Image (cartoon, rainbow, N blue to C red; front, side, top):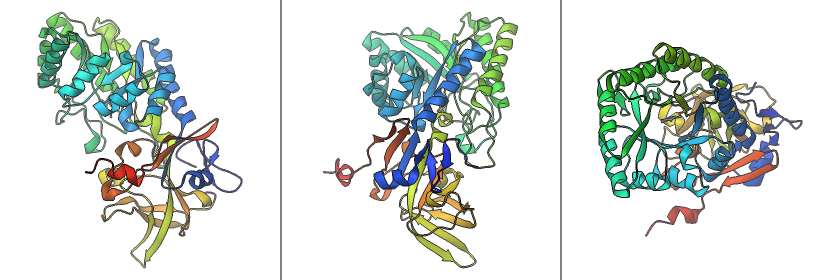
Length: 432
Ligand SMILES: *Cc1c(COP(=O)(O)O)cnc(C)c1O
């Protein structure tokens, strides 16, 4: 009945996450509050990891795409589970470095990396820098030369796959700010350049075709296109690429109508394509990297709010206002993303009402959902928004000088703060 399997209802009729009463969490830590289920995050890491063992002989690496949710604790968990991470900025890299994340398991992404970022990545020994374009390849080469090191690099390619997803989150098409297009010849130019530059060691190729994708077919298609390209590089340039990074983008259940595939089905099907195709093209089996972000943390999180005003504009719309909004969850404002809503203290009651959930920013577009089904709401109720573990905390902002809520984790051992909520003092810390 809930979108995530870690949610349930206890004897009091309250919503629970990982067995912990959300009303008690709201009381203990106050709202708004991000809550993440550590056990489910770990379970998801293991599912992806074991899928590579099961279907591909363990010849690969799961790199959690940490832009979905980034803080020290998530890097500790990833490290502890023996998976890698993907970082996209100096801030994410720096955070991973704080927990001594193994440099050989870090993929460094971004379509316009700065010299500062590349320098830190090389100094830390990051072994998988994903170069987005030729300008960047040259910059990486120059910095590596200055530092007297060889940069291990993968090239980001666009395989020309339209993954039938929301336009803003489709990145494998040619019309994309990311990567070098195979069809346009840019990808081959990039490979030639990488092989020519003295302080670059070309390790592999990368693609990421989009996000929140339910259909496995575009992933199979992408793997197929990438292997064809690897074969062309081998035949034309005599260089065999070792790593095939296939990105992330696996869809999760946000609403009852979403129907994601089991996470290990992806590796099952994609490995088949890779094995068959490699055999046919006479290629060594590549080392495969996958980069799930949303699918690892998304279902593990919820956000708790306290409901304030309930405004019923007769025959038009009923608004309920909460003590957060686009500052802690900007996804509705950005993409009209849908969520499942539950009144945590009325979780066992039927959803008899249709409401529009409004945030507290001075912005009409500050909504968390429009015309959503909900139990009958009153001021003081605790509202839970489900499956907010990905791209919520990591996209939080201080618009209207609203403070970022705390992130609390629940685990077998109870609950603990993973990220403290911002204080008023935090807000003015850098002001002069
Ligand atoms: C965002 C991103 C991912 C993760 O995408 P999800 O949809 O969260 O799984 C993986 N790889 C790259 C390069 C990305 O930009």
